[in-house]
Amino acid sequence: MGCPDRIGAGPGTGRSTCQGRHGGNTSTLTAAAQPDDGRSPRPAVIRRLRLAARLRAFVSWFDAVLGGQDYQRYVDHLQRNHPGCEIPSEREYWRRRHADADANPQNRCC
Image 1 (tube, helix red, strand yellow):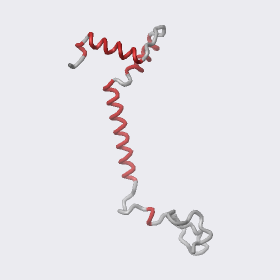
Image 2: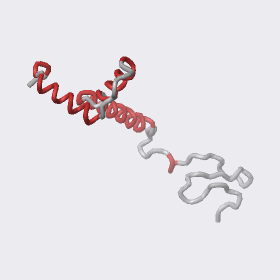
Image 3: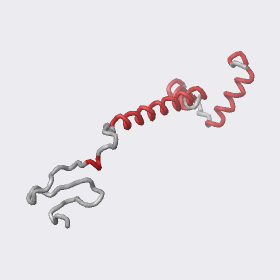
Image 4: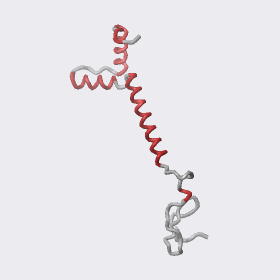
């Protein structure tokens, strides 16, 4: 039978909070809550966070290589330096950019 004064204690909770009146253990961490191999779970979490940061950095770099932010930079440039100019749609921007690249092949690698 369980202690009726247990708060939050039960199967699968990993806790025993019998408040000491019945001689129970007041610790809140049992062997079931610790890693099996005795290591701290922190290095695994840190490795996952570092991997996520590396993945975000790679995606950002790849986006920059492909020109993903070019249109937004162009719009910012137009708003800052040419406030009266009409801002083209993104589709029109890319159409003009590719037409210019075809007309001036010296800026390409192949």
